[in-house]
Length: 198
Image 1 (tube, rainbow, N blue to C red):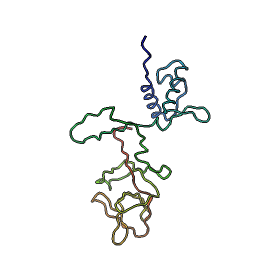
Image 2: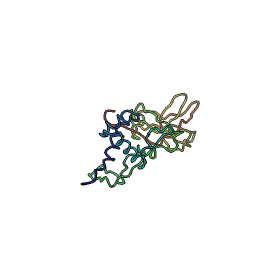
Image 3: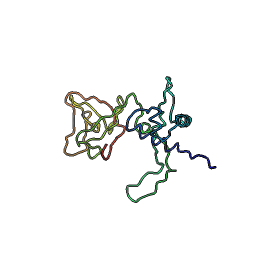
Image 4: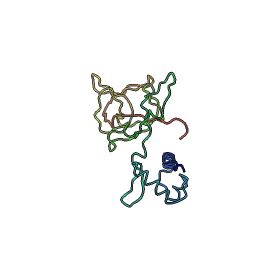
């Protein structure tokens, strides 16, 4: 008699998809429906295996909850060409958290929606989200979210002879030179864009 097939990877994928859709952890009964296990003992064994693998943990109250590893996504070692096609192997991927790529200091990081096209030529478009680290030291040439004369804007900070200025990345917009005050919300450290229907 052959040993039972381990379908934990498939079960984990279903749990990840469920959590992404509903943002909650299912009950035992619902969990069994999601992964296709009828016996409560089989569900418990699955949870224990996922805990041992580092995808789940118990809260102080004894409830199951996902760990950071549960939210890891495959990151390919191979960069994709924007020209000729290149094969991509599952073996060339390793897991990572998106936060580790975009967020250095969570307590100081905020996502800011972009409106307008003044940074179009920098590849930042209306509807994008910029990842902003508040309180970070800004240098000339950094992308920043700043308040200039009472208005918030996203621009490139440039040191000029007469002081600081905010430069757009679209020739249809003027360079902003503060008449009264310029203060920085933070430095842009990343960009998020979704394609297709949410």
